[in-house]
Structure formats: structure tokens, C-alpha cells
Length: 148
Image 1 (cartoon, one colour):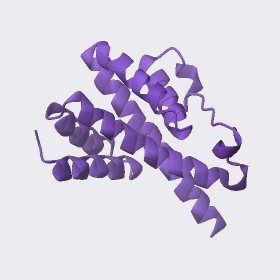
Image 2 (cartoon, helix red, strand yellow):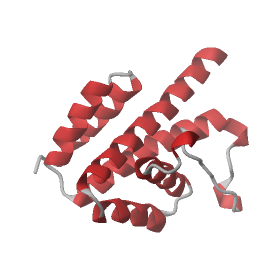
Image 3 (tube, helix red, strand yellow):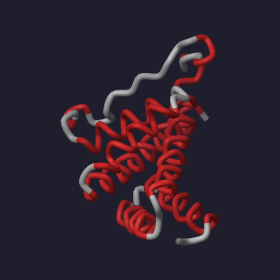
Image 4 (cartoon, rainbow, N blue to C red):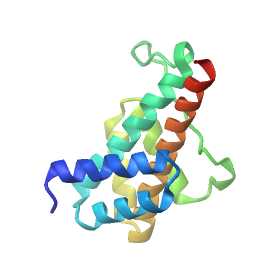
């Protein structure tokens, strides 16, 4: 297995490539990372992607963001609602929602569910999470550009 620092760099580079719109590079980096990672490491990668997406979401929402300390919570629907029956979109939306709400048990349960299933769905689901986190980052960046 790659050293943690190298794996972290691959995850960051995959997210950066996805944010820049280079889907091919992002997919290659994520495939390289997943080929040499155990489930615990890939769960960490999912958390890193969700963290980037959550920070972007809260940035975009600004004052309208839910106050988690006051019992409010984040709800996300799939970013492409016409694909609600697609397991990779379901995973991404549910994992992002659980992570954004600080529900580590639920995030872990969603990860465990894809891990227990078909390997291709597992990889596609993590890839979808990367795509959705990148979409949220681009949304936040576009908002910054529009207001600045």
C-alpha cells in the first residue's frame, strides 16, 4: 500500500482534476488510488471528498446554512434528480448528507453498504462522490466570482 502522504496527494489531485473539469485525469488518479488501498483508506478518501463538498455547500449557503448545533440539519437530494434510482447517486447524496450532519455512524453505514456490494458499483459510487464534491466546489467558486 502507498504511504499515507502519497495516497493523500492522489486523493487531493483527483479532486483538483475533477474541479478543473478533467474527468479523465480524475478517474485515472482515483483508479490508481483505489487499486492500492484497503477499505479503511478508501473510507478516509470518501470523507475527504465529502469534507470538500460540505465546506463548499456551507460556503454557498452562507447565513442560510443550517445550524447543526441548534439541531438543524442538512438535506441533500441527488445533484441529478433524474437519476434517483442509480445506486452510485444514492450513495453520494446520502454519504454527503450524513457527513455534512456530522453523522459518522450513518456515513460509515453507507460506505459499508457499497463495500458489501458489487465491486464496480463500489468504485463508481466513490467516483460519483468525487464528481459531486467537485460540482459543489465549482458552485462555490462560481459564487465567489459572481460576488467579487
